[in-house]
Image (cartoon, rainbow, N blue to C red; front, side, top):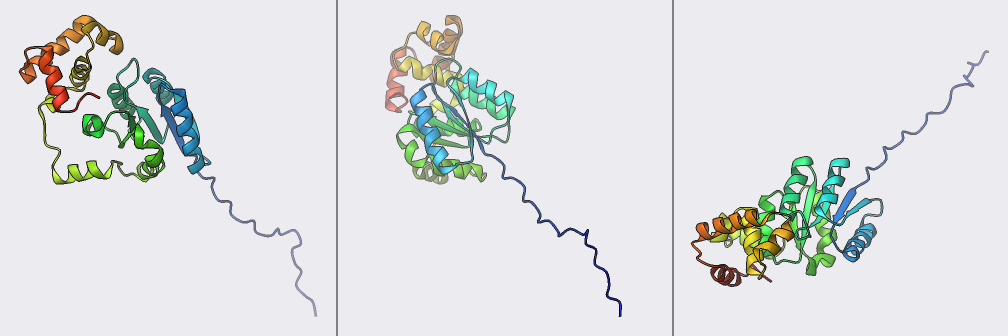
Length: 229
């Protein structure tokens, strides 16, 4: 009786290889190296396979955005040079799918709603960042928005009513805050890399929109609404 021959050359089936997990790319933008390093260490512990990039000003940040895709950006909203709000808008325009978490020393009621309207995925104050940043990054990576419980409650219940300064453009709002902090038109122009004439034009628009007569009116309003630190 003949037994069937086996094909000795037939190889055993090879197990299917799982595709490599995609590396999460996180860009940290802050003008203080110690803050960048602290955030990087914090996030590296939580996301050991993540790839990181750094920038210390808005111009460098945009160069990084134009160069390659990123999943999450932690963006300081107040850095020397280019306006943080302008940087945010250009980031979102260049990479619509990027999740930008704004990191700021300013309280939520000064900037949070404005940056969310400008396209940010969330807002963190620096005094809570170390406690909340990992959770915030996880939230925006899953497609959600991140705001504090207090701000979420205000937004949900409509307590965040529209105020006069919300009629200002982002640049006008920025100039208002700088005037209220005691800076001259020349100093503001230097900080924002704009001409004195341009800053004066913004000041005039602020005065007209809000019916102010002097810088003293601006300062009183800003202090009353807690727009300055």
